[in-house]
Image 1 (cartoon, rainbow over the protein chains, first blue to last red):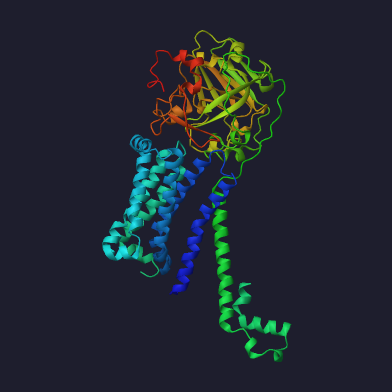
Image 2: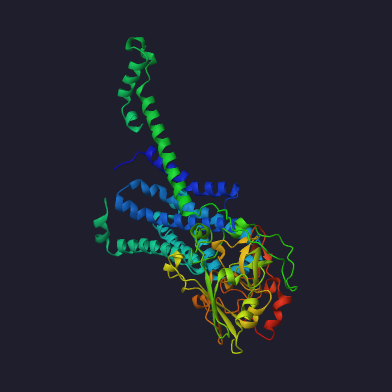
Length: 207
Length: 341
């Protein structure tokens, strides 16, 4: 199944616009004072969830492409990853700005004293090199093989994100655990693909 | 629409028939095929954009909580000003009812604070009885209507500090717990008071989950329970209590973290030993029996030094005993509050 370049570009733009829908609605609801009693908590929570969603979507691209045989999916992976970084940045800014008023010492203390903040920060800073090396130029400079190795950090960022969420929840851990299970499945697929390729290839559409 | 545009030639023929006779049209007037193809794909594209963004938007709205619900309670009559002169006047802005009634930690309904109001809507709290038993001379099961006649209902404006780091100022309507305890006449062996929430998964759907050990239980030391600041609340803002805030009757202990204020109470028991409490069972190193508001003792996972007052953007400093130190600190003299958190 071949898809023309124009069609790929179109698909990319559809995904791009859709990825911005949550941000638009968040902004709209904020503008209309519809974010509830604690709007800052709402924004922090929503941007955090979106970061995890886009991280998992990024990681789901390769398995989905293999199962469905839709080759152009790989062309949206970078964009999904950058959206994870984008929402992660918003998440971090909300925390630093509204919760801490950019008080560096208070933030440093928080990172030190609260493991879930430290782990969240780790997740964010793991995404930073991935975002920086996401351009075609950088892929060439680093070399495909090494680039791929580096970008396996996405999994570590995902683990950090899920852990960060799981640790901050008071009692109802069902949603962070759900995110963790999805991450685990994606990771299990990668392992299976590496060590039992005949097994995963059986379900793939085109190798 | 899609199917029609799939067949541009057919459509063109149709238009020709409708608008002009074929021989009226000059060759130059005929729209060439590529325009048709472009127009088709343009409309297709527009449909895909509109359709997917609408779907994403709907999904977002479905996952996220609904807009707040306006609560209309019954107007309470005969409410008097606070009786005890130890009640400090709070000149801080009162939190609007719409926020108090749409941001609730009430796990029996949902663990999502913004969803509780919607699920609690229509909660039936009539008839309601409260059994007072244990180490007392006169145990009794009270009908709620009789219970609220024990003492005049009073206006009590209190700060409410949640263990999660946010706070409100709430104009409760209620009466001192001490009035009820004096009625049942505790034995001298009684040292603690244990409270229990209704257990009824039909009315509290989330009691079907294993998020907490149901029913919710709480406890106070007898002197804390007898303190004039401690009240049983049956309303707020001069109206009956919204179900999401613990209708029809709940405990309010303003110098302790909000979760000590057990909601929808059906049983009060005087006991000799410190009773188990729900959050202490869920996280013994995070939630103690006392749970006094204390900016100097951090929760293991977050600081308690500051709080966000609902409606404000800057965080404010948390006050010792939630600002009620003058009234209650004497009860904890000589106690290491780090140990008895």
